[in-house]
Every structure is written in C-alpha cells, then in structure tokens.
Length: 374
Image (tube, rainbow, N blue to C red; front, side, top):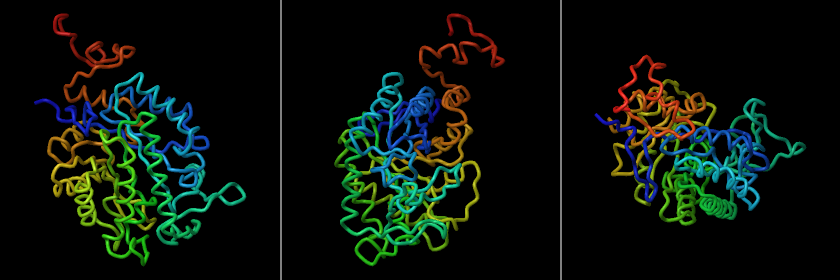
C-alpha cells in the first residue's frame, strides 16, 4: 500500500511533496533580530532532508516583542535583507517549501537564553517593557507586564501585518500565526491570563477577538495564493484554563474565517501546568479537533520519532500532517530514514545521491538489485 505520509498535499497554491513538517524551534542565534550564518547551516541542513514543509523558528514582529536579545525579528529593511540571504540560499538549493511562524512573546519576553536560566534582563543590561492582555506576571520571578490598551493592540496588529508583508518579499511560501505556548496571542485566549473587562476579555468570544483580528491582518498582508495557518495550545493543562472544548470551538471559527491549516500543540501558559510527556502525547488533541472540522488540514506534533507512528497518524486520519521538532534536531535527515522504512524512494540532492539506500544496499544488509532494476 502506498505511503500516506509521503503523499502530496496542496495548501492554496503551495504543493507539499509529503506530509512531514519540521516544526519551529528556537535557536537563540540571531543578532539584533537578524538571521546569521547559523541559520544558513540550520535551515539548510533541515531542508536537505526533504520534509514537505520547513518552518523557521518563531520570528517576532519587532525587537521588543522577542523572548530574548538573540531571537529573530523581521521588522526593518536590514533584518529583511538578512532573512532574504538565508531563505534565498535554501530556495536555490532545495525544493522544500518554507514557512515562517510569526509571533509576539508577550509576558514571556525579555528573558535570557535557556542555558542562562531564562533570567529576566534588567534595565541596566538592556531590558525592555513587556506587554500582555492583563498585568499578570508569568511567575513570581518574572517582570510585571503592562496591560495593553487598544492603541497598543492596534500597533501590534500593524506590526504583525508588516512582518507578513516582509516575509512574502523574502520568499516564504507559508505563514503561521503563533497563538500557543503562553505568548501574547495565547494569553488573550486563556482565562488564566486574560482578566480584561472590556470587549477583549471575559467570555470566550471576547477572548478570541484580538487573535482573530491579528489573523485577519496577516491574511490581508500575505499574498492571497499563499496559505496562512495558526498554531494553538489545545489545552493549558491547568484546571480552569483553556481546554480542548475551547480549542474545538476556536478551530471551527478559524475554519469559517478561511484559516488554511491548524498546528496543534499544547501548554506553556503557566508554570502550574500538569502533563505527562510521552511519545505522541499531543496527537490525541489534534485528532479530537480534526474530528469536529470540515476540511481544514491539521498538523499533529509531540515527540513523534518513529516513522511507522507518523504513517499511522496520517493514515488513520488523526491528522493530515505530522510535525517533527527535537527529532529533526537530532536527525536532520529524518525524512530519508522514514522513506526507507516505509518503502519510498526519494530523490536526493545530486551531491548526496550516493547516500540513498538503494545506492549502497550492502551497508543495510540488503542485496544489490540487478542493474536493470535500479
């Protein structure tokens, strides 16, 4: 039976050659928002493996919207030029469609790199003011964010749209709006972090309002023939927080307004979250949401490393695509192994063709086929 994981999927005008997605993964290798040589190596090595869609790490809408000083921001002509160099290299060498994830760190911003303990920057070492829907810190050791007023929200919408326009000029094929993991748009959705008493707080319809406005702004700014999707946290993993029923409701609205795909993750809103991490632990969340949708494609993610598991997820209809995250860092050419295990012969880049398993079968304990069958 032909592999479902290696079947194509169209998102508007973008044809994905297979259902493998490399998820966004923070690198903390930027310089004043710019992409660097690290990103040439990082994204180039992942593109070489031949996924159906390759995401950048989250790209912020302005410098003060970043998590750390080492995160990326596509917010000026200078940063745009650095992105164009990296994206141009990848597109010249590999056919893999490229996606940008656009986000704003919100109350989780202005912190150091993970290996420095995520300690907040102070004003003395270049820290900045962070913002959120409500003045609630992430944890007792985090700085207090300022609650956004409507002028601030309008400014952020314009910044999302401007980043989307720059992303299109740079050459990204797909855009995704980051509404997960406790960052700004996710914190508008969750009742744990949105305590507003205006039209953007309270009932779920009000809490969804600003994220939907941002999505609309990005959709208008990004070319109409290229897809725009959303990443959500399907549950906060905290009692009284956003849950899977809320996500189903939100996903149905996203589908109604023309969202092209939904990327289903979870958690990140609170240090009080309670979850058990195991292979495929978030797939059931994607499957439950997909069950309530008409046709919008759904991406599942969550410690999927076994190609047979990825094949089953797509074949059984739990999701339309499977995203690989840390597994891709560990094994950048994971799609090559998946194809081999699932009986699919991929086209490798010419310089790497000798590594294709049918070109040196003896190393895999296989018999070399007769010349006419190669």
